[in-house]
Length: 231
Image 1 (cartoon, helix red, strand yellow):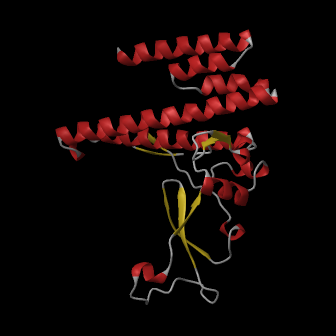
Image 2 (cartoon, rainbow, N blue to C red):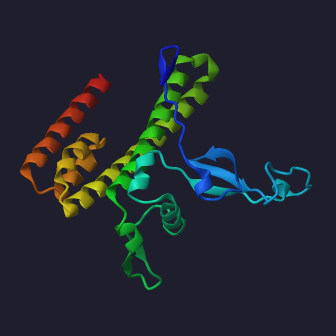
């Protein structure tokens, strides 16, 4: 973490061993949490840009990135990539052509730690967006009035979307750990939930009154925080 004019800057560099996928990979850039790359020919060390064709004759490929390298302990990267190709949002139930829901067995067997990695990605996005909003507010001369307000509204809306996705992953973890009886994780999940609606949903998932009390405490804290921010 570094700072610029007193504002924290989140520096994130995802780690991935591309040679586990192929020895001919040439990374280009990262877009939307995906590594975009091309595959070199067997005798190439660098791309050949002499061809007068689209993308110099190469095909652009993408790999989904992970943040927590420890997740590989629970599900290896090649298996993770294979699942995401057919089920990018990790749906646990997939509708068939007849309209019936079928269990996506490969997804149902994914450990909750992978869901937590997906949750953390949303948190990274939220931090980035909040930083951009701070920049816009602290450097007003960069933006004309209407344009500035439009940017702020757009980024605030994106934060809301990320918060919803963040809490959806947490609720999926919560359901999984009730089945696996790893109830000691309940407290961490409850305290990470950002939205009152999702805390209310958590009440319907958890049976233990001790954790329901913690949910009520979290709801009260969110309410007080909201009142403080509005004053």
